[in-house]
Image (cartoon, helix red, strand yellow):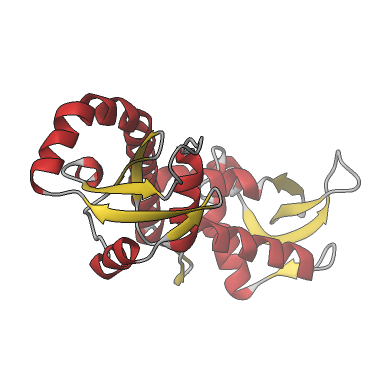
Length: 235
């Protein structure tokens, strides 16, 4: 698809209206700028210049023919001169490719590489988007459409519960299934009684989840590690 942008382009010649004997030299950058500003939906892929004229090329892929016709009918004021445009056809088109074909191929290389890079990035983004859309997490009978929803649920429980308050119901079921993803889940869940929130034993400004055992002892655990393992298991 990228190569088609540059295969068999529409070639348009342009000419600046210059008085006889007047010193003037076309600036192709000004020509490109004027065309892009006046006809932004035409995909300009190449330009060259002679002292009083030159050529531009447009991709034929999804080309707007009405805009191309309008360009060829509408003079543009560029460099304080009137520029007229005409589609290059027949013998003039053959002559263009004979004389300027090598220059065209040379000039489009950077744009072609950039277009390929952008196409690869779009494809990668599309694949990642599809991958994310396909991943759903069912935890305690509830479906979470992406991992960020799981993270939000855990934060909500942490923020809404008071220190030492018992966590029950679906919140407890949610945490228990998550804890099963922990590397040390078996030891963490041994003699399990309930969950609660409290201040981290080492970091006084940090709150975390605790497993409360049947004998009343408590052990903290990292819900972040659990979520990371859950995400990795779905990758």
